[in-house]
Each structure stands twice: as structure tokens, then as C-alpha cells.
Length: 264
Image (cartoon, rainbow, N blue to C red; front, side):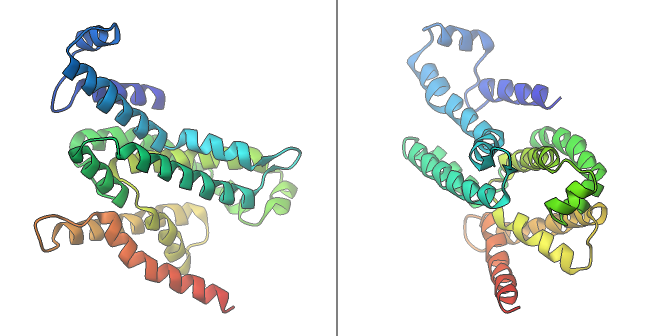
């Protein structure tokens, strides 16, 4: 189902835009025909943008991280997973910056706003595109709440209770990556939201994942809606991206949590 959705989205993105392209025109361009303007549109703007969106939809990145974080006879090591994720993220950010220096000023503005966490996919098409991911993966994650509860006690405890930790970790991380990638594709990068909402939820006393997941989702929705509204109502001609507002709110709180943990 997810593959079908992806194919439909790619098809729509190829043919629709400020300048529409029919499938016959795309076929003509691929075979060496078409006008220079249409070839430029397809190969220099539309296709690279689609490829970048898919790569930032995060699954390929997750595979790369898994490959480097995996150790034979041990499996996925959490510390290596985090460190590899930081390195890969830095590399992708550098590559993205290199690519956006080659595009025109209008697309450059769009990409920079997307990086800042602007909710650009603000119409019903993007809502419908995001819904299948949520309707399939969120119920599945809630169904796996017992495994999530067990995994938080550590690998040894999980193994003693009969949980295949490597297999469960891979499945759960892939689901999380897919949901994150789908959300980021229409909202841009809003990193602090995923960092602070679980901490807030746990501090409210929710420990079991059948409660923690929906409550964290609700808190995240409230924070993002507040941030987006503040950004839209900001003085001046433009609006502040929601991701920037979230970072302004979230960074002090996250630093407070780190300081509090270090003093224990």
C-alpha cells in the first residue's frame, strides 16, 4: 500500500506544477525530444526535487545507518546507531547545502524554509497523502506496545522474556522512520518536537506505551499548532517557520532537562 502511495505521489509530482507536463511530453523528453525549457524543467528541477524528497522520506538513510551500526554476532549497538546517525545526518546536510547552491532563487527560498520547518504542504492533497502512513503504522505501533515496554528494560531482560530484540528493533525503527519521513516531507525538519514531547509525556506520569504514544502525539500536535499559529501571526511581511518557533521554545527546555540529569 505504501509503495502504491509513493508511486502515485511521484507520478503526480512529475506531471503537476506551475508548468504541467503530460506523460506523452515526459516520454518525448526521455527519448531526447521536447523543448530545451521542458528538458530543463524535468531533469534539472522536477526530478532532483522528487529524488531529494524520497531520500529525505528517510528509508535509504536508515538503511545506511543500520549497515554501519551493525556488528556481526552482536547486532545493532545503540551507541553506534546514535553516532552513525549523527555522522550520516551531517553528511546529508552538507550534500543538501551543495545541491541547493545550484538552484534558482525561488527554489532556494523554498528549500531553506523547508529546512527551517515550514509547513508548506498546506492543502488537502498533502493531508490525504499523509493519512495512509498514519492509518497503517500508528495502529501497528500501538499493537506493539508490550514489546516497547519490555525493550525499555534493556536487552538482557527482553531476551529473558522471549523477545527477539534485534528483529523487533529493526521493525520498530523502520516504522518510526517511515512515519517521520512522511511527516517531514510536508512539514520540513522540526527536530525539537520529537525530542521534547516524549520527555514531557513521561514527566506527566505516562510510562506504558499504550498511553505514552497517543499522549505524546497529542502533546506534539498541540505544540506544533501553537508554534505554527505564532509563526503565522508574527509581525512583518513574512511568517516565521513553525520549526523555528518550536526550537525557540524547546531548546531552553531541553537544556534544562540535560542540566537536571547532570546534577543527579
